[in-house]
Length: 543
Image: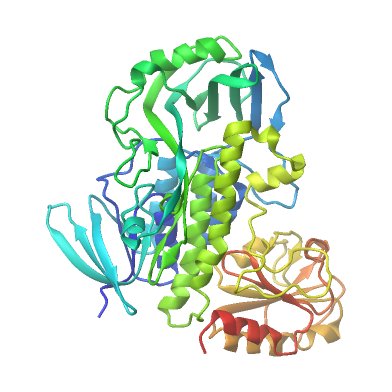
């Protein structure tokens, strides 16, 4: 007999994402974290548009956009000379923009979301060990009292950071290396007159080599930034959390070990590199940190999985780390929920590593390349670079649970992100809605597109067959061209009043689109009356 469905080790943004989504789906979940409280550090501050889309699906995006500040772009300075400004521009159909939000605020919002579903974080509680067999995971926890507790879970998810006990317990490799330079972080206010909402990167370059660097990311508040810069010799240390521990990983903050950067250290760098004369003040926190680049050989084994920094660490270039981890957790959560219900097909849980490991490999390689050579070294065109940095190009083509790409078409292929669109009108609403609004907090959603009434006539039957194949874990919606008139449909229907769905999806008359719970296209087919849709769902759901 198990005590809980899923045990989550680690209550950072990744663990809280997993726990919140599992709890929302009715999965019993315990979340433990060895720290007694949230850390008050603005560590990961960049929030990518794709992460905001995930928070939209989870029901948290309103709180996030009200708390964050827009990240409009970056101002570049080399040897005191202003370079070309980078503006973070995205196509108009992308619903969210780049944002900056301190990590402790991200964690607060996610913890509030978890509490809506009856969950809570068990602080000052550490996973000491675990073992698993084909039916369960047995774990030992250290409690705040100093005693221990043994519990049994169906699954264990390790979101416990760069020095993950779960990763070590699984015996996963963590290949890579360390960047030799140490850096310091500081959360300060400055009095310069640079435009708000823009990050600042100021460097000193000699013979093509950067020997001094200042990177500033705006935070909520008046002229407030999280600044990073090389650590001066008097603050360099080998101790603290940034030290390589027994697994050889040198990554993270120094915590309270050793001398901490003060305003004078930050001011010294500003005096050398700031594009405007300025004075730093209101230091909220500071630390020294080290950076490694590593990735596991696989994202799980048996009933135990890793996500976020437990699976991949890399330079913070482009704010990819936390965002990649949040997507790890969301990808895993809906699959685990299906497995806990006893409805997962044989390939569903295996697809987590198959889908996310290649993403982790690409992010580690790209951020390391950008850290060493700059984003200007990227060979792609600026628009592609922007979409990739926004994590809107992450996809799973070739995944074992993604359908084949059939006849040539415009729009997304199976495995691609399902784009948003506007102008969808319901007969009972006087206002249009976005597609993402229809998909929010849903299971799989089957979108059935029709440009003629006779095509729509079979949609109820198609939707019913798909729902049976998915054991009810599927919603269906008809998307009709503006001039289609039908009152016989029993499934919900919206009209594509602006033609945006047809354009962005390259939709053909009578075509079906299966959108997964994580917002990716699992299948598209014009053969809606054949066995194709049910056969595909058979890969995802047990008979």
